[in-house]
Image (cartoon, rainbow, N blue to C red):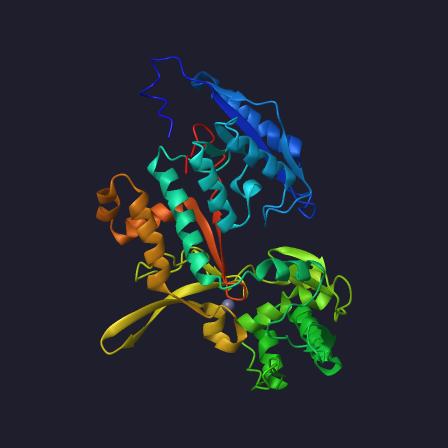
Length: 419
Ligand SMILES: [Zn+2]
């Protein structure tokens, strides 16, 4: 790490900064910093603000336009890494961490390449400053989840899956009411009888505007959730409708003929069940959320309560434990799976000790004053993590963990990390 304060007496040595920018083709135009130029401008402004410390912008551009951050096959990134190997760069500046990589594993591997060459890394809009305990914490949390993910991933199926989704293919999981899996699999076909029910449910909700009234009417008619036979020949009976199941049905974009993948919508291979615009109308009628957000009670002071989410169900993963022979086995369980049955969720649960141990161990290891962290009680540790992490997602299908860090536009000065 460069210590700006203690070395301030001497003339600072030059810190040659390379700016890396990236934008993938599918990234929406609604993003604030959607152009490579805008990303570069923000980075240049940041470097400019550090010029007294000797920071200078290198003229070479490292711009990957139209490349995904999911892998490292990007020409400008490779050029950047080569320049680093050649000793031409002291610091890499990006607008946001995810410009460098969207994969935790790639990110940590890139950072270790930086480290080998004493190259520092700065994300201008995020808390990435190893000279502060918050910055160290951010980095250590990131590394700990990467480690945990490495343990979870058996084989890397996620890129394949992501590619299939982007082509609008249905990539498996439990079919929903209204669709069957085509014989041979891999594709959804409309189940006309169920599709009628789905249309009726949407219409009922539009009429009443109430989830509860709609649910009561569904139950009166004796309609149930999807029953299906899976590949192994096992038959799953559809359960009765709950409020959350109804909400999920009403907000499922599949019915418009589209698929959603990592928050983005792609047009699907399957047919729509609803008439155009009906789905949008219903979304505007749906109440914001059944569960209170953030402020959930947390009597166990579980480290990741309120942060950890099941990506498959878009549901929070909540802390729970099983007791056996006088011992407690804590775990985080998908709330949706808890309510509607384990078969409905690929993530199901995660052992709390493994994930927390991985996070805490890494934090302890990375902190200079380990006692400081040890002395914090659970509540303070939680607060420290919450200060930097906004959301942790777990996808049980790909066994992938994703972390969203809080963005701090206000803390744009003096952010540096050498990892
Ligand atoms: Zn789930």
